[in-house]
Length: 482
Image (cartoon, rainbow, N blue to C red; front, top):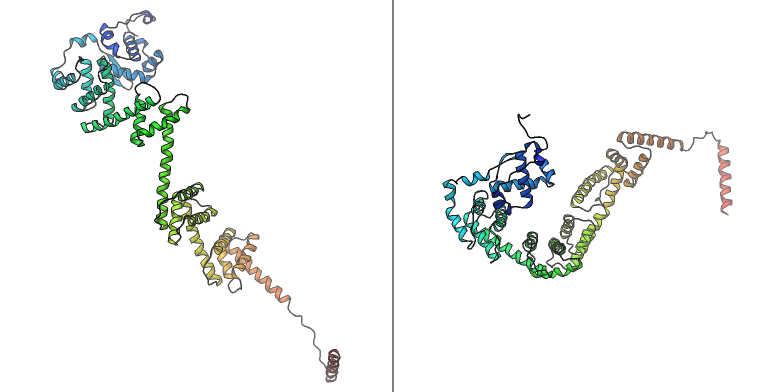
């Protein structure tokens, strides 16, 4: 606890002295929030027991902490406070009376002597004081803008405003914003400045034309100029196209730049999509080996490919395959895409994976053919059948079934019969298939043995019996023939 202190509620009913120099020289050029921040901080200097930091000040003044920080940066630039720490931010209030008694060092006075003279000459009829010079000198020291660029900035602003120049403090407040913008844009030469002014100048005039089209008489805001610049430089829209789009803004209650921006964005997006589709169709035609230009039929067909879910790399792959097989029309591309659609593939990655699987199963089918004795080319139906088999049982068991079918009249049917039978019995592995097939063959052999002609008992026949039997048999045959 301090040795001496005011009573607890002294701050509420006490007095905070404010120098007249602040009221006369500094308060008129500052915003209301900045003045409130300065005065509240001045009170805290006299009553530190009330200091709750920047958050406490924000609550007391009912403003954002960012506004407080901006305010102190402003007063720091004005020379009324000095920053002591950054985190947390703390400031020291400087005495205005001591500032008036202190003479500036000679090197600071003469450092920009010639520049300050040219700056004053650029503003005839306006008397600049230390406040304006200090701001302009900060553009050189802090923003690192060259002197000729700063003077060009001032001349440009005067030319744009004409004879209607505001008070020095108001003018330099706007010039300070422009100088900061130029520094952020990296404008450090006259050429860069001239190019920037040319672009922003045209944007300003176009924005004015839009406002006139709206039936209004005012100057455009910064945001409106920024939109105008975007329409011109990013979207490459001529003024007549912008003005023509203004007609659609009547659908809204009040025409605005924001509504106009949405209209123009929709048109640019549609045009960009159409241009992109036209370029893609040109690529497809080149793969097909045709020199024809894109027609509306081509564009419609391409749109149908996209709506079917195919990405462009997949469509391009279809065109490449068609061209390699001497197929030259978009109908050929459509047929190829339909095949892929039935297979459930619509992207190039899916198509390449399916082709890899097809190659894998083609090799498996060739191995099956070799084992079962088939000597012909593999067709799609063979691959489809093999894919079904490998889904039912393991590949080694499938190859074993092919070995079992060797020498049969219809090997593929025999293999299918074996695999369906094994799968129904839950047999999937090679070992189980071998045991089942061995058991099947054993049971078959036993069944065949049981169906042989039975052995009858033999007896001896005498000569008389034989002759009598032969005679009777012959006579019976003759009667039957008659």
